[in-house]
Amino acid sequence: MDTHLTAALSKLDPKSIPHGTNNNYTKVIDFEFGQVDFKIHKLTFQDGSKTKFSPPADLVKTRDASVEMSLDMVGFNLTSDPFGFELRSTRTEGDVLVAMTNASDFVMSDKFMQVDFQVPTQRIYGFGERQRQFTLDEGTWTMWANGRDSAHDDGMGGKQTYGVHPFALVQTKQKGEFVGMYFRNTNAASPIITHKYDNITENKNATISYITTGGQIEVFFFLKDNARNVIKAYQNFIGKPSLPPFWALGWHASTTADPATTLQSVKDIVTGYSGAGIPLESVWLDNSYMSDYKDFSVNGTSFAGL
Image (cartoon, rainbow, N blue to C red; front, side, top):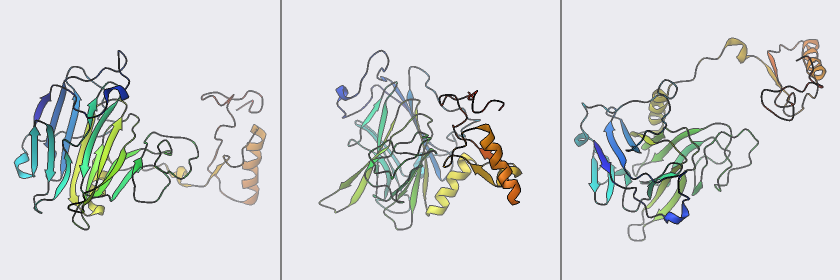
């Protein structure tokens, strides 16, 4: 299903988002929702007036919605005024899996995009990589590769670690059933989780506010199944890790905790392993060999001859 929106929809205060020649609001948005197959759905919001960056398909896998699949089969409901949609379970009456309603914020500009998704429970997992307990509580869960030591992530943002895994696993109202959400975007992102409580129905649900700094909004929904099967479908979708070379599976020495400050000290490490009869495949130097911590540089004094 394709449609065009004539403006970005948002309850956000426009003054809270810096804009101008370097960050123009997107005034025409192309919206597409379709089925990839019986278990995977695809949602896209993109600038209708110009092309925005999307990760190359040969590097970050993607799939197009199938023209042979019908949304009438899957519990998809679209409203136009105000704009929104619901994706409901076709097996359990009243079981909304994910929705974008008039309670959702939605804004698109060149360097700031936010779209809110209403999800049925507060049991949310994913958005790695970070150090914290398994369940994600309310908070800001930044995703941007960070090559420094990070303390326990308290949900205040900016405490992510090395990996970026823009995937969330959300439990539905049915015990043991989950929905997966994969956000295919390579820009910096800071999803925000907000808990909600309905005093009348006593339902506890949540809002996932996906916020990113560029590109387009491209979300794949992996429809409900047990957690193992949803994660398996996601892994099959993005592709499995490449088999490493044989030598990479051997023993490696790191100098991060005990820096090797000269080339001779590195040679001494190798000699020490050899003298102890311990097989050694490589020595990782971290940044001690650099000149003033600059990439692609070598300290010409302490590491002369490297």
